[in-house]
Image: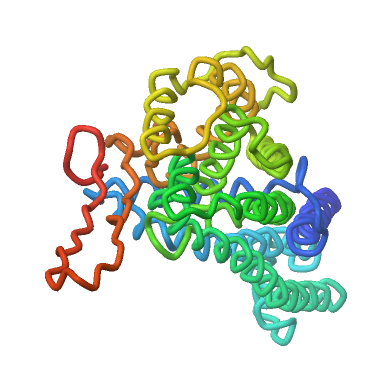
Length: 386
């Protein structure tokens, strides 16, 4: 019996060590048994989602969900610690001849670096291995955190720029509208190029380190996911409405954007169609698309096609990423922006982006009108509620 326990314990120790290696050290998407920590992360997320039901507004829900990622990191450490204690405890049973005493001795060896023997005769080889293992894990975790926060900072720096370019929350048609209103359409190629590079960095970091998905933006209405969806919708509308005027960078941005979203969704367990039909169905309706085209026409955005002519091409682009984006938005409880789908854990509708009033200096007018910023509202009026 002791031999069997020793073998099982050794297997637990080796599998846990491999989980640590693939989570912290090896920069690649976890698969198979490597996804153990992903299960831990999801369990923590579900616990916080249950807690967030207490909030009455989206802002309150976001505040309750904000600690999810740090708690998930601590839960990973606790999970590894328990696995090592159980594994080394089983390996020590043949020395102590009592499993309870062996587990106590393994816990002492792990958390005191093998310095004390709490129960039973010593087994120096296993005690030293247990203590050394935990020292290495703590050292790796210390080096792991800066990598996470560096990726977080790179992600959020570009998202923060969207407040002035795409509204809050971000929305695809608003990207084109803002650039037209202030006369900076010439900057759109560089804008698309920066988001192409950003999306490439995003997919590398968020598939290698799945816990990154649980880190929310510093502000409630900021979101990397809603931001990327808005940029892709803006690029798709630009290509569909003005194919000759739109930059080729819009096409490259779209391609990298939906590749990133689909790979992240696949890593989280969603089955994604790698080659959907361009004429395939999408959730967004033509009426919604037509309303946004009319809004762009009202402000003078240059167009070469009508909404009816542009719709097939826009739908052909959006079918590549809509289902994955909507699924991720619901799973991560992203801000309820227009054209971002429903939220399983929110009962409110979408919230329209806020646009500051257009002002021009008039030195002859001494009485300037008061600037009023209208708070975001959802369909039906009022603030976003859970």
